[in-house]
Image (cartoon, rainbow, N blue to C red):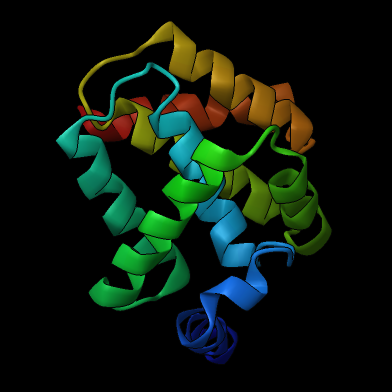
Length: 151
């Protein structure tokens, strides 16, 4: 997996213009969905940015520089995307159910990183969980896990 990520960054950084029409990578898709949650309340808190960095480093096993590049690309993708279809379909195709549940848990950790429980962030996570075919019971369970971890 690490080799695939390194190849992606080498290709993209070598000639970014030639890859504009390609589908996003799995890592970029996951990061983009997390960014979508982070910006759901129209405010990006520094605590959420730090939480995103930590989640991506832990989840993708990347170095700090690679995470910074991935975060920048993900935020740009989210700003320019019309919908979530390309990201969600890639995740559904490649992640098993357990990994999709883990991604929803990460969304909750990110949403709660600023110390607030905002209804717009919850709504966005609910939408994404539904699109990822994560069951409602797992949606609630991941929410409770993230809330108890914050205490």
